[in-house]
Image 1 (tube, rainbow, N blue to C red):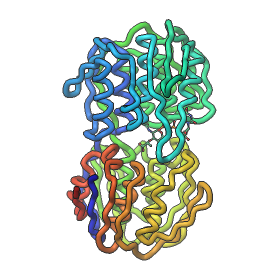
Image 2 (image 1 turned 90 degrees about the vertical axis):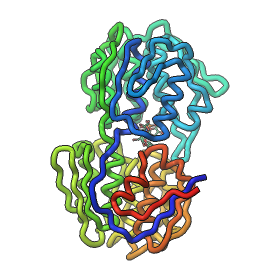
Image 3 (image 1 turned 135 degrees about the vertical axis):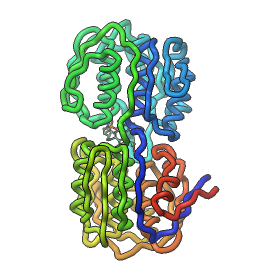
Image 4 (image 1 turned 45 degrees about the vertical axis):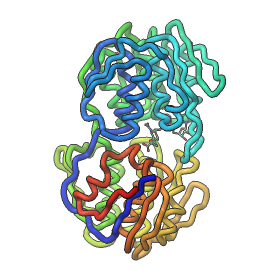
Length: 412
Ligand code: EPZ
């Protein structure tokens, strides 16, 4: 089991290149299943979940070499449990397999640390499009001679639900309208890639997406958007350590709410093209956050702001409205001395002057990031255990942080 050893008390200074977005890369890689032509994908991040998705697609018969994905010879229409259990995003092969090949067998993802995370909305939408679906032995078995367009209104905003049904609709017969659709930038990035492949999609980025089915999609060249959550994570780390950093290769207009919260915390931020500069002089001020679907404050940044508030001046309220159990980082932050009280989906954080280093355990991807941030500001050494969670969603994070002046090293 690998760990990270962090010496606290070092400010972050310098420049860091933002990688491609994990949550755009994963659905876009699945889009390769929708055509027999070559899909060339640039800016894919080098992280565990992307490697898992490559393996999943290759075991189906997709030929993947460097940035080229080719699904001309897909011969296995299945996403097996042993792959789905480690990466829920594997559910995103369901829509593409069903709409291009008429069949798919995909393991139910099962729960995960942050919540039950069902896929009932994905299934409900595919049924509305004419799929025949049986759930048995933990697998979703879906068949359809040819999917047809449908009017689908999501009970809840679902990012991968919107992405799965958008991909199912691009080759369906007729028009599909997705209402109460997710507006996340990663949904827009997927739509832009599908449009480059010949899909007819209007309204991506709004809560109403209209897709006119076509008979075939062709290949394309597409570059994945920069990761807004990685961007936000580095900005919070710089604010927490009182540093001055510049992000390059980022896209500030996908981070408006996060940048606004950082300014409220006292950070000086300016944006120029794909660069975001942040400097924080002195201790941050406490800042309240409430997670909600885009463009509101992202749930994937909640844990990071919890770490910032742990050492901020004042009292902060953090409300998590998306997942029912996304406070696992709280008890780990409390081991570092953070003063946090939880009441249901609300946490009240009384900022401390300082935290004390300790051994803590990562429980999910973004919780891990919050523990790394806290470790960088705590006095003494912090050991973060189970960092495979971190490696799933961040590309070379300790190398990037070390280059910014953090004292952080990986130990076995
Ligand atoms: C995506 O997960 C992201 N993952 C998550 O990022 C992110 O936290 C989440 O969206 C919310 O923004 C990817 O894009 C690969 P949802 P997703 O469907 O699509 C409920 C990370 O850290 N729901 O938008 O699985 C669900 O339980 C990860 O990178 C249903 O009830 O999330 C949740 O409460 C973590 N039924 C809410 O909706 C469904 O069929 C939002 O979930 C689907 C979802």
